[in-house]
Image (cartoon, rainbow over all chains, first blue to last red; front, side, top):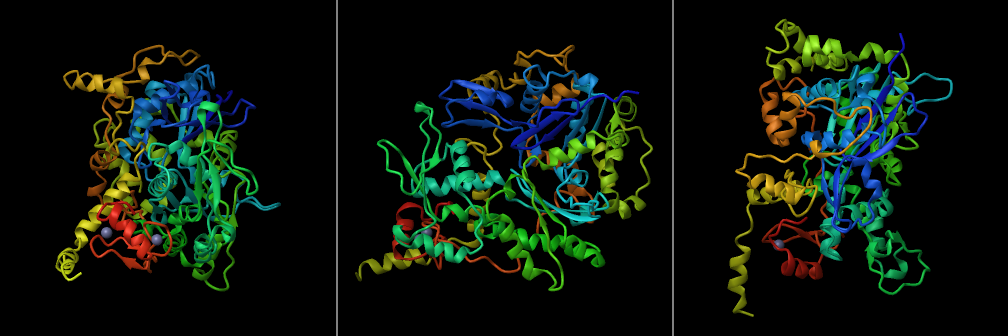
Length: 431
Length: 167
Ligand SMILES: [Zn+2]
Ligand SMILES: [Zn+2]
């Protein structure tokens, strides 16, 4: 039997990474937003944002809130555009789907995923996974001549939050997963506040400030010394950058001015001093903004301490980074500096980086989608029509089995038809 | 000089209590979650004019965007959306409501869920930064407890943001 093409859709809260197994085209990155540009007098749905010209005071409508899918109207509008002839040009009813969902997705939200996949788009089959759980299928940890390690920790620093996800034999150990409520959205908003208080009012300029963040910010490995450098007078301050703010009426984006370049009339300059490193610093010290959660280094230790003790060494030796938040320059060096003193002295620590942390989960998903293994993981439309959402949860639930073992022993398997059961509660058993 | 003292002391003797500061911090963290500055977090009335119209129409008629798109391609709609889909599209619930309706609060805390997964607080408190300039904040405003680094930043603080929530 011929296998249907698979759409791989890494459905991030900030961007969607999407492609089809039968296409040779590279991954397509689509903003997961409906963006209204005052200047262009247009609302752009997802992929249409490529046509945006005026990026000032953009208004964002995001399907995700706090990392979870809540606005299905917006999400459907964006997905419809992706499946249409403007992007994938594909008949969903002739296709299978591999889609990502957030860590600890709520059962009542998962149910709506199932409904959209089978009742609205009528996919032939689908498999839903968290991004980190796909990583064992990819090449993030690949070493020449060696299989992927059996124990690994995936750090996923996303738009809404950051997760530390231990995986053993391809299975996520949910009882040891830790979350820090710091993501790219919070960092951009925090930078917006600092800039607006200290220099220019840019509270409405999320898009522009996000660009500043991506171009100027780095993770410091010597925070104290860098703070002092930024206090020094201009000639000795080797950190401060002059960011020339964009001028969309002249179709010019913002950029970092070279130190020896002469000023141009009418330019607006944003000085990026200690903001360059104190913004990403929040992920390492969330306490500083009043968020009483451990920073990334300590949270990784919290996670490892919940894992079987004899395997700790294997986890320390296999830490992989995914998600745009891990792409700040200096990230790996700083994480290593955080971890080394917290790990047993005789223990090897290794951090694996991706060439593109944003698309790492997509590429891992694509690797899975091109093998026959996906067929065994996926739920078919017929199975859904027969067994409902409960069936999907049980089948996808294999990932949670370890964590849910004791609970499962106490709860007899549900025999009531899915429709009649309180799905909310039954879906929880897997954990 | 002697005249000013009593006023000062009166101000300083009423620092914000811990609860107020905690509330302020919470409000600030919520603000850092906003998608757009000019609206409360969680608001979805993004497509302003249309949505305003939708709300005013007896509060019942709801405007959607997904059914107004003119798209073509092999997946273009063959039939009307069923009840489940229409419900999901028409009735957006915010995250707090979804958590409430998920039943997660009623299950054993030994089962890992969104509610149990947050990293525990750090062992050591973090050294604060000046809320004005970003340098070390070794002093705290007596009124509102925000850190500052020295006299210059204290006076900026006093004039611009004392007791306000910004960190
Ligand atoms: Zn200061
Ligand atoms: Zn104050």
